[in-house]
Image (cartoon, rainbow, N blue to C red; front, side, top):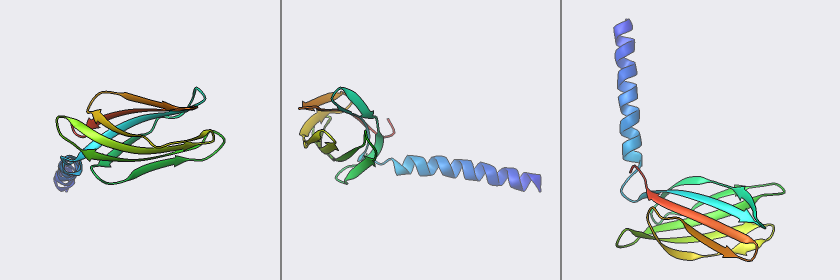
Length: 122
């Protein structure tokens, strides 16, 4: 009986690894962002984003913010990142052609957005 349970656990663990590797497909990216307003960091979300699919995060409260983005695969190790950030200080809506693995910084008025985009699974 213990052998069956052990074998079942091994199958479950192997299946979990297989699911994770299939979940991160060729068009998936890990986006690490930092949202600041008036020099204060409001959040540092990390999102798994599929190319061409909208992703967003919203945090409520006094230092709340919302971040929406869409990452589209481009040529030569680059991606097109269209984002929208809203804080109590205002909003920005940058569209940037970014090199994968290199951090970008966009600042407009009191709002600052840092983006670092990497291929998922790498």
